Length: 152
Image 1 (cartoon, helix red, strand yellow):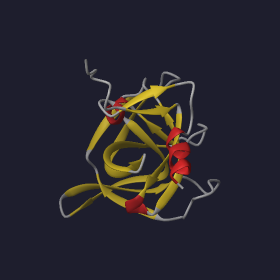
Image 2 (cartoon, helix red, strand yellow):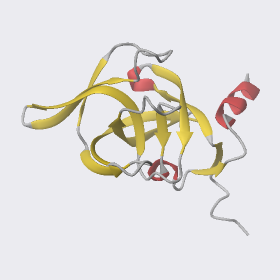
Image 3 (cartoon, helix red, strand yellow):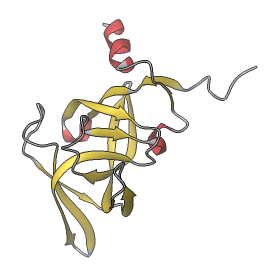
């Protein structure tokens, strides 16, 4: 008898992800089933209006990160969201949509933009992205990288 989980990929508690449209690759991501929305570490987050539409301008990562490119990104604001952090404080965040590549598969995901400089991992992948696609094995990490290495 087939299970509803048979077609789901297994990922570890940490994985490496790519943002191909931004030319950013091999970024550490924490898999967080406690978070609904995924988030990106950004700084200089600044909303603005363009042609009557709401946009946000930001720098992805920060100068201390290996793949930091000091490039300013400008994307439409998909929505705003109130987020309660793990320390209990609440903040309004801008949410954008972007392509992300994981296990060689390109997915569209929503990311809230926030300063994660105090966090160990610059990308957090939440339930909205994971649901219906992945099962999380918390005893493993970087499963997608191990699978890619086996292909070579």
